[in-house]
Length: 295
Image (cartoon, rainbow, N blue to C red; front, side, top):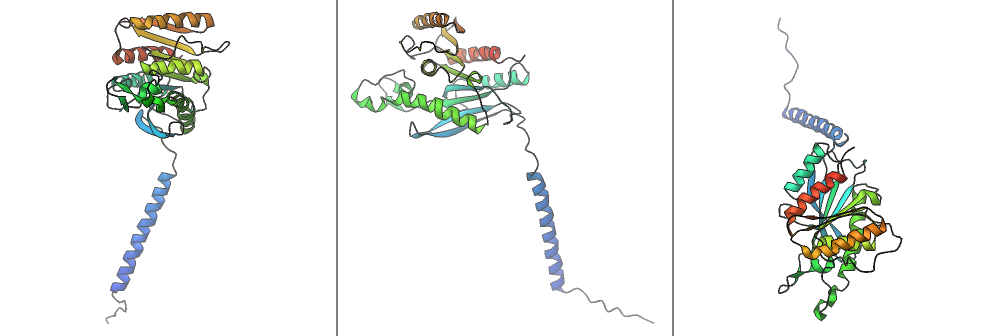
């Protein structure tokens, strides 16, 4: 006897329905998998990072760029010393703290020679005001050039506004962004040439903002004026100039005498050479190696 099955062949409608159910199942599984990944704890940065960011300055009424260096394994829940510098420029261009200097800093941290540090380099303003005199807006912002002509009257407050930007906007923004609640002693300043002169002016006017200054081949800064505050606790100072820069020796001698009078630590010395960022890079690395060395 033959038994005839009553099972019908699946229709195209049923096949299509099964296909859709399968696709939806895969989608649900995929979403659950992604949810698990997104909810996992973020990993630390295993390599150092160097990139450019910007901030809108209310004082200067414009956006200003700065370079940011974060050490490997950076963690917002930890506190780091921060070096604030002038004359930031294109990451792949020439200038201090790029290429070889960055490698040196990485090497020092990787080999546990210094404690991890954040480095912030505020861009200088490259706008040219006078081609004949080689004067740029940077010179007004750093206080190296004082407005003397009627056509320069727009820049009479540029230095004051720039120093407010640096100490109140840049430093505040960086420390909020990276969750760094620092005191004076955790902050360092580095500048060279007119950028170093700006540092001396910042040191004199606001001695309680930054704890240590590295100023190499400083131009400007109104070093010998009477603006030194009686009773102020000034920051530590590392001041260097070149053997081919005898015009800076008088400033160096004044600072050495002033710091001795104030009974505050300073290291003021002459290096072999002239006005050269390659020398400043090397001296910066040597100095910071001593300042941030591990216990």
